[in-house]
Image 1 (cartoon, rainbow, N blue to C red):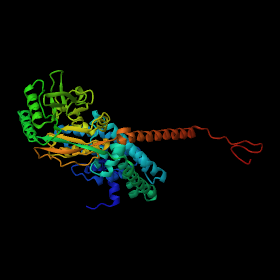
Image 2 (cartoon, rainbow, N blue to C red):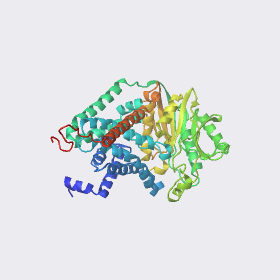
Image 3 (cartoon, one colour):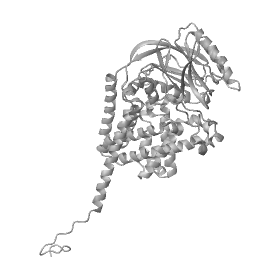
Image 4 (cartoon, rainbow, N blue to C red):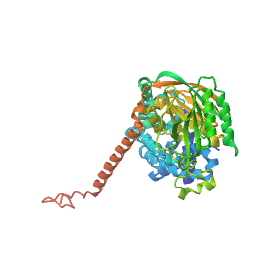
Length: 528
């Protein structure tokens, strides 16, 4: 059925049709992320959403369009949670989608009707700033963390990775939204095409300048790191059989001159103090391959109450004492926020029956021959600040131990593995992403791939020649400065709006100027 422009306008006048269109438009950017990984689509993916919002009849309707689009976006980037959280996934998406309501209002405020060139120029800064604030707020661990930041769709694009070394994933998100705004203006507002084209040219010029100016990590030696990925192992005796398979794969590394062996998240399901037999087996493995082994213990600790997820370094003599306890936990997966209020989520999905305990500080570990590594666990690799702090604390290699076995048939494993490329580029440090069941991946200090991925169908070990690098990237030095710039832009806008409102109020309240009286004239009947 072919619909004319008039038919589309009539349908969009219906709140139900318009709401459905907003949710669908908000979901489109998901195609930019792995597994589809249509990175180029991110440069236009927001255009339908922007065009819909700018056509809203009122600011309130624009806010609704922003909210419903945000719901569609959050549901799309977290669709793989549906088998685990069921209907609660929709509740979370609806709550977090509300963060885009102010963004929708901003889009209409600057792009509705036929915006002047000045408003278009302002929109190229204000609308991306508003988007960045949404990403900042939802990046809080308690709201699910920074999964699906728009800029992370560019994880495999070399110029974008160079930009990430300057301003992190935040700069990429800002520029992507700015490009989408410019394209939307080109499509819908012919009279304002000049500033839109100028915005696109400026973005291209900025990218070129960063390409030539930004410092490149200087490679200084290499290290050989092995990843052990046992694959899917289920059943009541799963932890024991998984450990045996990891042992078998690690023995294959003997004689390959590796400097470190990394196992995935929850690779050891028992506290090593309670199970000295396992600690002895790990020590024997370390002696056999002549390298330390980084395991991840997911168990109730014997020295303190509660269950921890911990990166533990084991050497030829057993556990070395180096340990990192995971600090940022997955909401519902590892703890239930406000359990007294939301504990019912455990009855409708696979939410954590018992809250995991949190670590208190990041740790940089020394691994043979002076190599220093900074461990992270699971979705901590999505947080730019964690890897940045590890790099500033002296980590030469970043490590992420992960497990996405609950989501093997979804897009989650590939998307999770892609995040390590951004963290490597931001910090100028190579990163190893080791998992139980795939996807395992390694990236160099510029975010480039090192070797091949271990996919979700692999049960294997692999050795990677990991380049080391010196120097400090601008992002590692200055942090999330694009976020601070966005806050300044929005604060300036807020101040301008307040001044404008005060002026309008004064104009409305000022009394009318009385007509002048003269000797021969009446104030009501001039000339008489």
